[in-house]
Length: 339
Ligand code: NAD
Ligand code: UD1
Image (cartoon, rainbow, N blue to C red; front, side):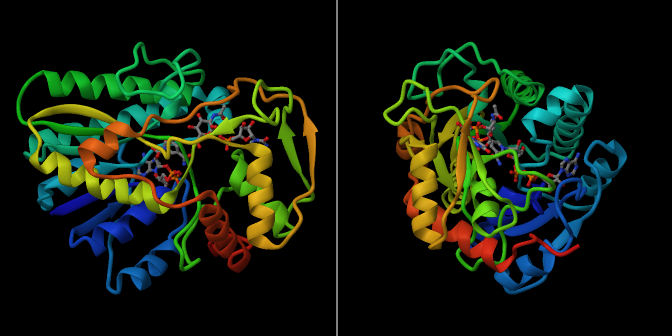
């Protein structure tokens, strides 16, 4: 298939591009580089062994999005593009709603106009809100989220569901990611957060490499075995494989929309993650326990049964693999991608 990957220069998109090409797909990328750097492109080209077609524009520009579809024929779209920092979304909610919703509207309109009806959308476990029973199952309702970022995902899921229900040929896969971590085993592409990392794994990696002094552990009084919060960390290479599987599935499924969790089905605590990273890196990760972070839940993980049964996909990489690959990326690129 010829696949348009929006946000293909970003963390998850870049890893997925490599696996799509390896699976025989013809890949075209659109990215505004709002949260990524063009220097990822030559590294992707080295990994895929050839040139990569990249269009640098903002999908909220409806004319440019429309022009791309007028010029090129796509069999499917994987839509990663979006802003994703939870804390920032609380400070500048309009920017988040506008970017994430408008880009989706422009994209889906252009797809509809040009007869491309297969879409894979990046959603998040955050749409299960605060009250869903653990493990999270796809049929849980009502979806809700604690931040403007999360609510933009809930809204987009709803819009896509309505579009699919209106009839026609839409085949839409909504993939709800748990906590993506890790990097390509080559160490040449990985997660490159701008400024202070918000998420646990990149913060641990920056402490281990010496770029930051210590990690703050947000709370050790949760009702969990060691008191720190548990999450379902999933290797980005497993996540990328989940997209290849979802693309294959929607090429054959009946029209409509279906959601799949992409997680391992297991929780790992903050302290367990620190220990695993120390083991993988051979470095000490100094930390101090501080108060809980507002909005954090104690523990959750995926019920990953549906993806296994319907996509033929399961996560195979361990927490040790996630730490080893993150460390290879971080230690060989301590400052991330060059400018
Ligand atoms: P990322 O920021 O690394 O990648 C997103 C890419 O989209 C960036 O390269 C950015 O420049 C681009 N982009 C943003 N807005 C755009 C626009 N309007 N037009 C064109 N390009 C635009 O993020 P990621 O971690 O790779 O996440 C990919 C998707 O997965 C996002 O939708 C995110 O919300 C979702 N997601 C991520 C996580 C996670 O922890 N990383 C978890 C759940 C869901
Ligand atoms: C966060 C987002 C979630 C998003 C996900 C993407 C919040 C409240 N939630 O989830 O919407 O989909 O990222 O991966 O921001 N921790 C520390 N010290 C740190 C950083 C994190 O102790 O410096 C702890 C957190 O309290 C949490 C765990 O590590 O218990 C994981 O945190 P993080 O990586 O930020 O992910 P989530 O909070 O699960």
